[in-house]
Structures are given as C-alpha cells and as structure tokens.
Image (spheres, rainbow, N blue to C red):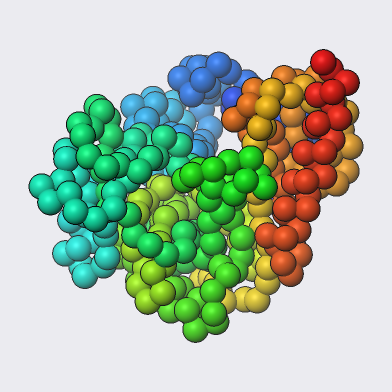
Length: 355
C-alpha cells in the first residue's frame, strides 16, 4: 500500500518488505525481502543515504527506527515520539487532562476489577493476542483495559509537529469470519462508518479535536492513525499508531485525497487543507487462511484488483494473511464479503488439488 501511495505521488520507491508480493514488485523499482524487521533494517542501513518511510510494526520498535535515522532522512515520527505516544499511561493522562475519553487502563490487576476488561499486549497490533480478562495475574508485557461497548472506528490524520487535520474516518472490520478471523482481530476498514448521518458528523468532529490535540501534545509529524470506539455519543481513544495506517487505501479511494503528498507536507511542517466530508464509499479487507493452503495461479488475482498478492506455489499457514481485497462499491462490506468468498473457493480448489 505504501509503495502504491508513493508511486501515485510520483515518487520512486525501493521497498524493504517481509513478503515481496507480486504487486509490490510492480509498484517498486526494487524490492528487498528479509527474515524480519531487524533484517530489513540491516538491509536498508547498507543502502546509499536517502529518505525513508516506515510502516506497520515499527511503532513498537523505536530502536530500529533510530537505526534507520542514523543512515537516512526519516519521514515520520522520531523514536522519542514513538516511545511517548505508545505509552498507555502517558497517552491516557494526556487525553484525560484535556477532557477526552480514554478507558481505564492498568499495567497490573485493576484495584477495582468490576466491569468488563480486555488484556492487550503492549507491543501489539491489529488486535492480535487481545483477550477478555476476568482476573488473575497479567503476563509480562501486557496491560488490562476497560472494554467500551460501541463501534470500532479509526481516524487517519496528518500532523505538522504542532497540529493535525483528519483525512478521513473509517469503520474497522474486526473479528469477521467472512475474512477468516474471530475475536478482536482487525481485518479491514470501510468508508464511511455504518452510522446514521448525524452520528458520523459527530464522530468526525470529535476525531478532529482528538487528532489536533494529539498532534500538538506529542509533536507528531506526518501520517498517523487513532483507534476509536464510538459509543453513540462519544469517541473513546484506544491507541495511537504514529505511522501511515492501513485505512489510507480506502480513505484515498473514497475521498480522492493524496495521502502520501499529505505525509510529505506534514513532515516538512506544512499542514495541508483536507476535506474529509467529500462523499464516497470504499473498503479493504485482509483475507486470512483458515487452513494451510498452497497458492495456485495468483497472476489472475492481479487482473481483478486484488492486492498483496502472494506468488504462485507459495504456502500459507492457517491464520496467516493471504491477500488484501479492495472495493469502491456503494456497499463496500457486502462487496468485500463476495470477493472473499470467491477467493476462498479458489483456495479450496487448490488445497484439494494439492493434497
């Protein structure tokens, strides 16, 4: 996604990626693959000095971002910013002091355990390893957070170090079996959120206030995202992802926003003017394998607009992502579910033929 956004902004891209999917090799001038984030950083550190944008996962590894910044000009948030905004205690105190809603969150068992709680990893992402918590000791590296009932949403924004503007808001797709996941696992985003018009307007207004405040309080730069729960009248902030987020693909398609251009301007201290109310509908969903599969002729997926396309013959274990589906249909969730069923049927055929 990042390579496509950058290419649409007329940027030349060398991609350092864990998978090296078929469509990435068409978007980037060169693709370097590695065995993990640290290996990718090692490879990037050996390149001639240039500009670097980091994606998902690096917000949990500021030391790796620091190493990238030693070699390259960092287009995004510095390691100190990552440490600050990813600290739940600091984030919660900052938001509450400004009057924003943030769930009760503890690094140890809550002093008053009444209510419903979720156990979350400190260095998590995409809802992985999030579980209901009903008491007992917390494993190292986890927190417990009050569960807020409502619609899972997100705001994508861009900051200039002092302020921020919202590019768009989305409904997060979480735990949907049509895409091969359950529980709290993230599997996509749709624009607009499926809410009454009045609630969507209120959500956007509150998201703008939250993102603007966070942009200044943490001196954020460039694209970032805020995970929210909308309870019907109030937006609760769950966490901040201080880097380009997965929702940008749907937001750019729905609203005609040039996300990568906004990122470059924000990093340079120039806050762009964004109209997040432009009508439009779009969505994306990550399809996960529900059984071990071997990919067949995935070249045909490229012709259908499927993204993050694995190579023919690639083996994907159950629970791992297979590909990303995208749509600009008026009913994006329905369209994505139909696409998922079609790809899933093809995977079943390939599994039978393979075994």
